[in-house]
Amino acid sequence: MRIAIIDMGTNTFNLLIVETKENNQYKAIFKDKTGVKLGKGGINKKLITPEAFERGINAIDNHLKTIGSYNVNKIIVTATSGVRSTENGKEFVDTIESKFGLNVQIITGDEEAELIYRGVKQAVNFNNENILILDIGGGSNEFIIANSKGLIWKHSFNLGMARLLDMFQPSDPITLDEIKDVENYIDSELNILYKAVEKYQPKQLIGCSGTFDSFRAMIVAKNGGVPEEVKKTSAYPIDLGDYEKLHVELIKSTVNERENMKGLEPVRIEMIVLASIFVNFIIKKFKLKSLTQSSFAIKEGMVDKILNS
Image 1: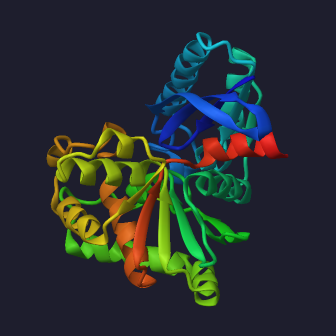
Image 2: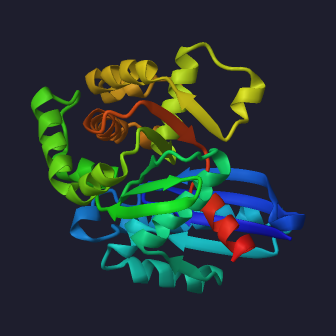
């Protein structure tokens, strides 16, 4: 059986097509993503703007055309913070369902965090140590604490990068005072996380979704590339020294400079600075000892849920 998963994120609409095998296993046969910026111009007003609305509809249309050439048996569509937190999110979903004949699942922050965990555990080998997982989105950021025995703690925070970009509208390049303002705001919103980290003491960070994919691609490009077998891996250890250098470069950069940075997706050019400030803050705050990028997240988690529920 072939299953297509469309993950309607706040920044990108992601597509994964898989072929199921015996013993609840599967093989990915196609992956793609389309930059949509669903939250641009309206996320903190709880609105999907007409322009973003149209970009989203066009992205679904394009993904369905792709799906049509793969003889897919089942299509699953999920919507996250960029839809669930907006006043016209239901109208957006209704339009998709009536126009394309799809059923869209609007998932809660808790459900999103669980799917992320289900995805990451396929890419990373957990041990007895508690590990902190972070998925940076446009509308929300999910934190999960887990180990080899399972998921321990999870929470979704409305601290996505589209929200922060709209809220702070930083200079080009961002100033030190603006960085401090962003960090102070992040600090004020994470008390629930601080209590969990104090209790469970994770020392490693696993990052997934577009921000960390970009970090991986940019650092690999700076290091002269990697062998093909490494390119195909679903998890990649990011040296903290390499990340620190990239972070310094990003916060000093202008939009024009970022447009020419190898490995940085165009849809992330505006938000990557704030995303890096967020990640750097978390690493320093919790004195984390390692950083690993996971290529698996919500989409792969949904496949796991379908096959194992």
